[in-house]
Every structure is written in structure tokens, then in C-alpha cells.
Length: 80
Image (cartoon, rainbow, N blue to C red; front, side, top):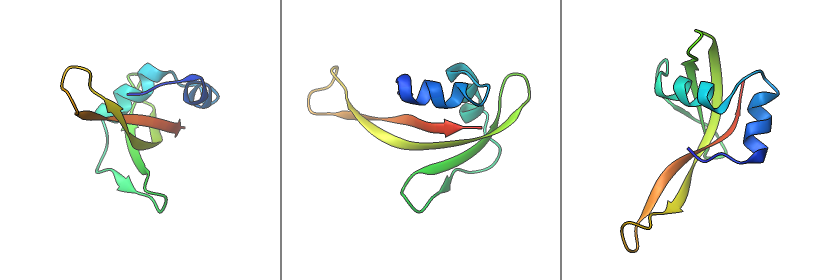
């Protein structure tokens, strides 16, 4: 997961933490749904049992351990 001030503030505005969102992503309900803008929506449950929708996209990041390789990481746009 890739977190910054922008997405941490967006999820916090909906009463969620980065940990809540990551847990819900990993404990999703059903498949990821692709959106028109090439991002995705995922429905999942937080540790407290709250069902949330997560809007996210893949973000490539350089992997320093392997020359010339990148990792696909999840950049959360928002969650509510």
C-alpha cells in the first residue's frame, strides 16, 4: 500500500485509518470492480465489522532489491 497525506486525510474524513482500509482490502467481499477511469472499487470489512467501499488504483514503484523491476502497489484514492 502507498499512503501519503492526501489519502490518509481522505479516509480519516470518513472515520477510517489506513490500517482499517488495508484490512478491509485484504478481507474483501466479492471481486474487485474496474471503474471507467482505470481505477477499481473493492468492498471489504474493517476489523470492527464495518463494511466499506475502497476506491484505489495500481501504482508502480521501483523495487531496489531487483535491478530494473517494479512492484505494483495499491494507492488508495478514498474509502467510506
